[in-house]
Image (cartoon, rainbow, N blue to C red; front, side, top):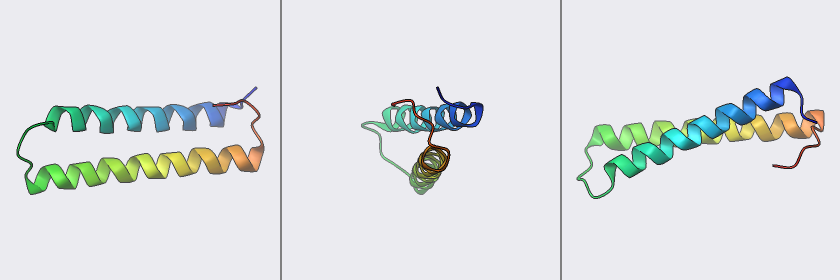
Length: 67
């Protein structure tokens, strides 16, 4: 069983991963501008931060559910 905070952090991580994937797919085959690169970097940071927060919470609170 996972706690509510763990579920929220997992949801945020999933949403950020989907956003990055969608944006990357949208740009596939197109010439990328500096704005595109900035947005990609922002989304990658968001994925990294949300992943770290989720994993840190899982470790600290020992939420036992496998992911």
